[in-house]
Length: 342
Image 1 (cartoon, rainbow, N blue to C red):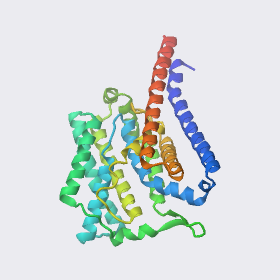
Image 2: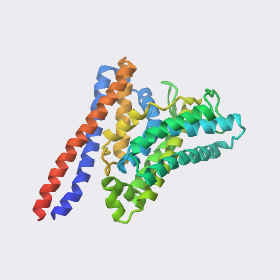
Image 3: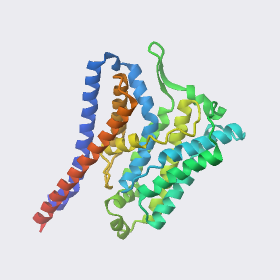
Image 4: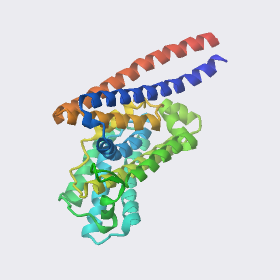
């Protein structure tokens, strides 16, 4: 085996070990919580964690693509609630209830359009993704409240209201239930995995995260890829926003914005490199579950909400710190392998 072969395979080994470590942490955490509070070990708790993970999971898939590409998007929550609230508002108050498919398509178009705005500004003007999305987050929310509406909508249009009570699994004895909306989320997970691993678009995303200029020299249409990426992120965020509205059985324009920390922390803990070029859907799924289990555990222990947020922030710092250490070690290892090759 040549030094070059060894260098190519090392990142894959790192990803596998990261996912194994995450799975082990989840198992240990569950065992500890079951010992502390036996009520944690129940179907009701399991379904509760899965329900709470649905919307963050959708958002995390969108954020994963951006982080792999070397960027940071903090506007996804604003896009999600903008698309969902606008769609519900028009369907309910404007008489534009076109059924489930029509409402979903309309929300996706709105989300994709807002993502297109991000993509154009980032790709054409080569501005930092964090600054651009931080700005558009404020713009999108401001436009929503000023021009679309700021009132709480208590009733959903008939086209999607039935989904609020549609359950895939329901256990009457424990009042535990798993909503039908878990099905589209699972489909999105598999779709994201296929898109990243089996398409040129996915390869281009990884290439941009590894080295943007290198990807451009390798023949990848970087500008077009970036625009397509943010359109995709906007569309997925719109789906997440719509799922949030359906689960809550109402639409509130003040929702979702402020949940970005949990989502980004989950993606980073899942092994996606904050520096770009690395990340997996499996790791992201495990990261989301870990954050939700921690939040649920803290609630059962009676920990105040402020400390729950602090715990997630602490996990994010740890995740980024570990990545920085691993990046330094990887650079040293690559230097040694290059020396051996010479």
